[in-house]
Amino acid sequence: MEKPAITLENVKKVIGGKTIIHGLTFGIYPGEVFGFLGPNGAGKTTTIRMIVGLMSMTEGNIYIQGHSIKKDFKKAIKNIGAIVENPEMYKFLTGYQNLLHYSRMAGGVSRERISEVIELVGLKDRIHEKVKTYSLGMRQRLGLAQALLHSPSVLILDEPTNGLDPAGIREIRHYIRRLAEKESLAIIVSSHLLSEMELMCDRIGIIQKGQLIDVQTVNDFVQDEKQMSVAFTVDDIDKAVRVAAEQCHFKIVKTKSDGIELQLEKEQIPIVAETLMKNKIKLYGIESTAKTLEDKFLEITGGKEIV
Amino acid sequence: MSSMLRLIQNENMKIYRKGTNRIMLLMLVGLILAAGLILKLNTPSPKPHVNDSWKQALIKENKNLEKEIKKVPKESQSYLKKEIAINQYRIDHHLPPVNGLHIWKFVDLMTNLVMVIAIFTIILAGGSIASEFNSGTIKLLLIRPVSRTAVLFSKYIAALLYAVLMLVVLFIVSWLVGGILFGFNGLTQPYLQYHNGHVTETNMVLYIFKEYGLNGVQLLMYVTLAAMISSVFRNSALAIGLSIFLLMVGPTAVQFLSKYDWVKYVLFANTNLTQYITGTPVVSDMTLGFSIAVLAVYYAAFVLIGWLFFTKRDITA
Image 1 (cartoon, rainbow over the protein chains, first blue to last red):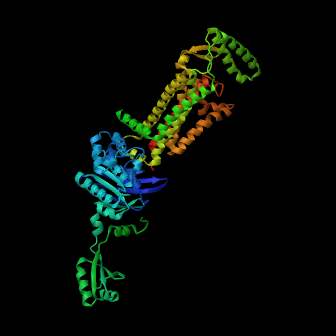
Image 2: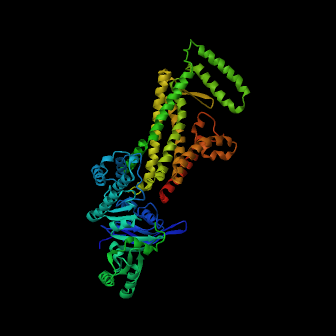
Image 3: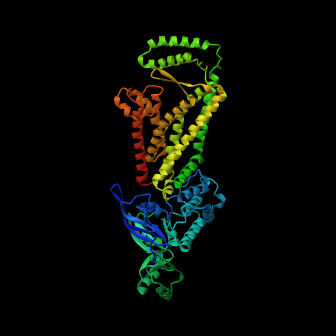
């Protein structure tokens, strides 16, 4: 595999004698969308702030395209476009003036590039209006525009879909995927919307109490177990429970008002169905409920402190 | 260097696009106009001098002043002595005084508004640093390939440029208002400077610029103080409030405590450099050089503290 675009090496943060981040080590590769998942107060934002140099590290180092953010801030930060928490822009300036402001700080951003980015995030019609008249969704787009302005190779988005309507969320999601796949950006996305992460990310890192407790690809995350829950809708629940237990030797996960739910493998579904029908139980429906990221997340974090 | 110019350009854009900063400029112009009109309405139009009658008037005035000088306590005598000396100079050199206000007198009076400019610039400087923290925009501002030192410096320079603009506006507008309301015929008046019992004639423009310069030093000190407080506390209301409070209370408190010798090391005893030209210093053994040295030490401390807090601390806004 190629070199990672961002590398965190044993990054620690101690604030007032309290360790907030306990030695994070991971890398993110070009073309990859990395989901940073964790309950509030787990250290997501602190980590992001350390990556972009807003906060100092107590120990360890972070490299962006090989440049240390500690020692070589300007060279490192050049490669990053970011939104940290909310996309807070100057409300008394227009959207365009805001972009002009950041383009002057980056250097080498042409007017054409500004127009291009405005077009890209779909703000062309309102760009010359003051930001205070913008909706949260529009501010989010403007935030994305300022992050992309200097064509960075690393994009960091803190809660990028916050405040967007469903159509906007889908658009941003497609956009993020496109940036990663077509332009090979390394993208870090943080969110507590698990369903969002599942659709957007390639890999997910779960952070809890300042520790990275698991990093997996989304597919592994959801499908690492062959077992799945299958719900059988039946008329006689008691009988179905008895039959399933005595004749199929399956563990019943739970009984529902209209049927039973079993934990089994794919090949076993027809066997169970056949057995039930043989015992004159009316079978109305079979539904497999794949384990979602949310179930997995709850399992890993122990279901506590989840927002 | 060009990157610094671009940063200052950014700060200027933020300054002049903000309604409050433009309103402050208008307020300054409004204040000069209002002061001019009030003075115009409350001073009788000057009568032209008949022959040498003004000389008799001045001789009479000096006699009265000399009687008065014996009655007043020692501290107040220096002012009267100055009046007498200047009157005498006018008599000796055939320089009739202009009755009532004239253009330069008005411009000179309006130099008091430099304090208003100081307050406006404090509001601007205190706000320009802290408001980035209050609004959260500091995060997007500091994740650019620009050092924090450069960002802070550009804000400081932009605030001082704003003050310079206000000073230029003050000079031009008060000159025009003074000329229009009180006539341009006072233009040739020299400034009579009194120093150690001697009266010397100097150019009025030079004198006014000197006033501006000395008041400008005071402005610079307060603005730097405001910028430092803003950088340390990251709160615009606190930075502006505290700086203006100190500007109001400081000089008075220093006057109250002037019997103690240590007062001469206090910032506020030294900020007003015009005390060496027009009045008497807060503590009698203070000199201009001493004040400049004290101010330099304070200035360096403000800059260092403000810079350390801005560049070294984590951004948690």
